[in-house]
Image (tube, rainbow, N blue to C red):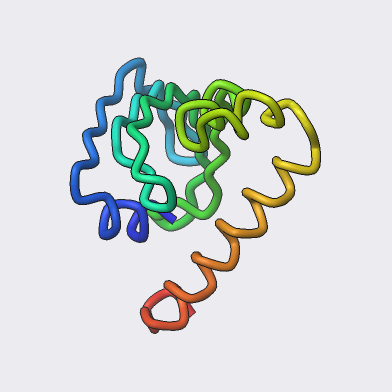
Length: 111
């Protein structure tokens, strides 16, 4: 997912802090600023990330962030009005998965 986001995000700025890890797991505070490509709107997303590692690689990453706040920045009025609903969460997740599936299909190293 991060490879796809970095490749797409022509103006992506990422900062991180509060990094902690051992050989099995880790966590970090992330702040990403970018233009959401589907709407052209500027987003500043604040995330708390947790990771699981195996053989020195990330095998799982979970990001926690305020979806309603993100949807307002990324989608404008629609996000502010519907960002709290499971409907919008599912729709955004489905679109992200579709984009990720296409990206993976073009990058055999992830298959």
